[in-house]
Image 1 (cartoon, rainbow, N blue to C red):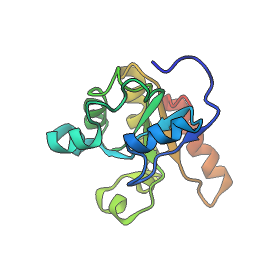
Image 2: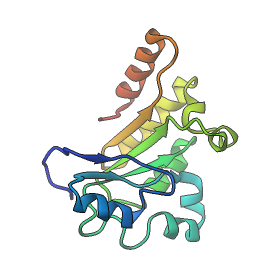
Image 3: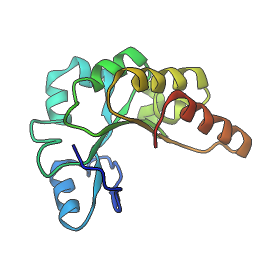
Length: 162
């Protein structure tokens, strides 16, 4: 695992940037916690070539911990099955509920799930009860502070731990 120290410097997930070589470089200069780039849960589960490209044999290995794998997903069972392929090589799994890009809209994931509190709850809660490593979630705020607080409480009540 990644130890029990609290991370001081975090390298957030970045498209086309936070792959293994970049994470090693960041850690060399003091980063203490890294995320993978966003992994598409269904493709990760169903496509071996995609899986090996997204999370190869050296990802989550020595010198690459602590590591959080970030996923996009819209089906709790698919998300769980995909994420179960990773431990013990990750220290947590993150659900990206913040991606606003067109690809997320077409795939119905990321910030396009924000209005479906029930699905968001099921996605996180399924992981919380079945995965064996912590589940976290990246969220966006709503225009309404009240709705944002309701959303954050839903995510927390579902079992998100950071």
